[in-house]
Amino acid sequence: MQPTYLYELVQSFSKQEQREAQKWLASPYHNQRTDLRALFECLLKKPQPPSKAAVWQALFPDTPYNDQQLRLIQSYLYRSLEDFLLHQELDNRPESTRHLLLDAYRQRGLDRHFTKAYRQQQRALEQTPLQHPEHHLALYWQERALFQHQARRERTREHNLQAMEDALTLAFLSMKLRQACWLLAHEAVYKAEYKVALEPLLIELALKPAYTQQPAVAIYLNCYRMLKAPEESAHFEAFRDWLFRIIGHFPVEELRDLFLLGINYCIRQINRTADSYLREALELYKKGLETDLLLENGVLSRFTYNNIAGIALRLQELDWTAHFLETYRPKLAPHQRQAAYSLNAARLAFSRKDYAQAITHLQQADYRDFINNLVARTLLLKCYFELDEYDLLEYHLQTMRSFLRRKRKMSYHQQNYRNIVQLTFRLLRLKPGDKATARTLKAAIENTTPLTERRWLLRALERTQ
Image (cartoon, rainbow, N blue to C red; front, side, top):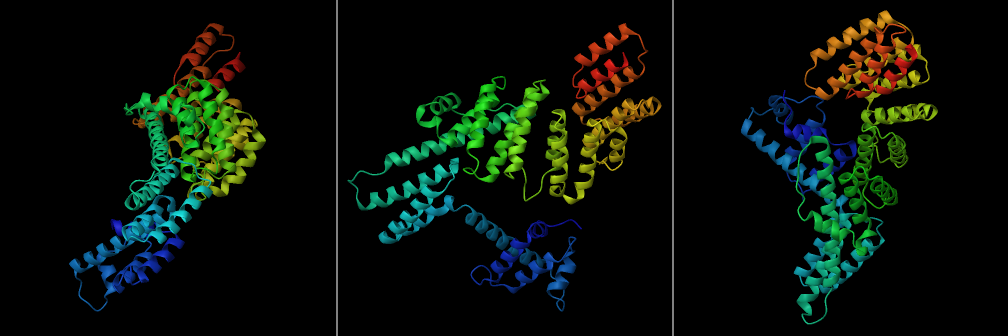
């Protein structure tokens, strides 16, 4: 049965969220209907989406089925759980909502209560280590609440308008720069074109001395410049230095996004043959692992696992790679753990020239994922070549070519691996001592794009001479 919005929402709750939601539904202030609590418990226990009839039978076993009534109950529960989620989010973002309490006291004319709450909130904002854009927005709302309170009582006194202005400018400038970074990052991947309103004025303002040392502005200014002029390494270096400085001063999710922006920039530079960025990428990955920023809910994605291993192997950090693979193997999602580990263990074994062990690991690699399938097939191709198993290699190349012909949608990857197959075929058929053909093949390897195995093919060609 097709899962409903309500069923998917209930099933998304963690164990702790389930307990909190049960308390929410048990509170008369939030819910006075026992059938909503019963429906929530029913859906929690169902590993698969239940039919309407099954749900009704669980709720009202002695009552004839009523579709309209069931729909109403489901709708009420869905809205109550949405309110619960909103409440959870507000609890997790106190800096964004504290000013609402000040507004409530001001509207009731409770001056003493306002003053007490304002001082408490001011201390909280002063003591927080956070310095991200939303922190400055919270400062603005705090100052705005104070201005509205004072303006109502003392219209002729000097007010905190400058503090309001400063906080708002910092919030606006840093948030606009952050948005510009996301637009540039998206452009680089999807070849889209976006316009950033006030772009030249934003950069001019951000470069003023009053803002260059403000973390919320500095990190996004240097990120913007890094993405806008990728050939200027100084911009990346400034971004990296600020990134390491703001750890602990930005929310975890925002820091993770910044790390990924830096890592993706390095990968694009590496793809442009700027191998010096291999070390930079690995240092970013290492710092992200050290601070747990690359983990989401305690889980490391298999793509990040693969990328880290691949970069470390290119830098010949074999012992570090072995330690990484074992240490973070338990952090992979359970259903992807063995396949991801086996693929990367095979890559490590290949780098150690233990080709037989690499082939053994490849027998447990993930061949369902298109990219992992091609990575594994390419690694097997290289093993056969290094072991002088030329008959197996030729047969493997033929099956790989047939596999690529059947996959027509992933054009970039298809072309890259088609190039690898074609050039390996030419390498296999190269006759010993045929220097003219070897020179032609070398030129083809050097000039063919895309070609992720260029270095290996050149070394393989050199070995045949």
